[in-house]
Image 1 (cartoon, rainbow, N blue to C red):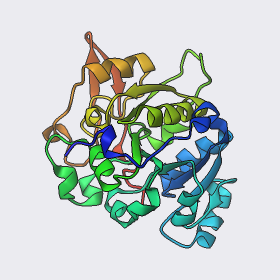
Image 2: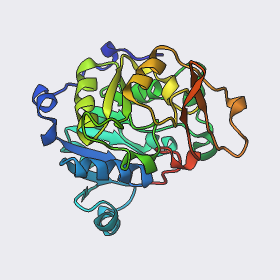
Image 3: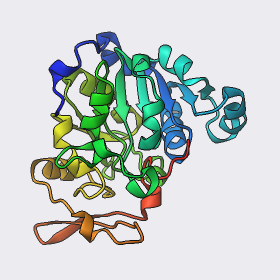
Length: 272
């Protein structure tokens, strides 16, 4: 069931957009805490941002004017239609409501996580050995799916941003089956204030999701690269029953990352 570059034949990446990412129009689908944190980061980096939720954009506009000033509230179909890049930041149980035809030919960022206590049990995402983004790619075969943002907390995304070369700059993994799509999203990640760490396939991203060694850990690019090559996974039995998850990643006898309460992780409890 794993996806490969050949599985996304219709998605194309405008090379002009890759070389000049500051001109991108980006649609964020999902206006909860995760989506709005991503939207604000993009706006601050100078991008044009459209924002959609499940309801009427006129209602969304009342919130967006306060929470994400500068974002353009739209119906999802309108936000996506005019976008160069689409970011999905909604609960996975709502993903089935998104028409695959809307994302045909688009580069789509999967900023989501699968949380059974929130999403319920979804058989496709329960499949042994599959990363959640592999399933998302299968749901949208005409798009080029890229995974990023999901392994950091929405409350950390904005304050952790740093300019290039800053000694405290952190990394964000950028994973996908299409190198051109990964390059486009990496340019965006760099512009908002993180060192992008390319990961060569969606199938190699289990370390970025709940139970994985990089999930919740605020890491440098070097540390992320290390984990990408040698991952440590936490089994579901080790996640406390109260659904808080605080993995400690051990390298050479020292801890290099701690998570915080799972309510802070991107898309974990995003109700929009």
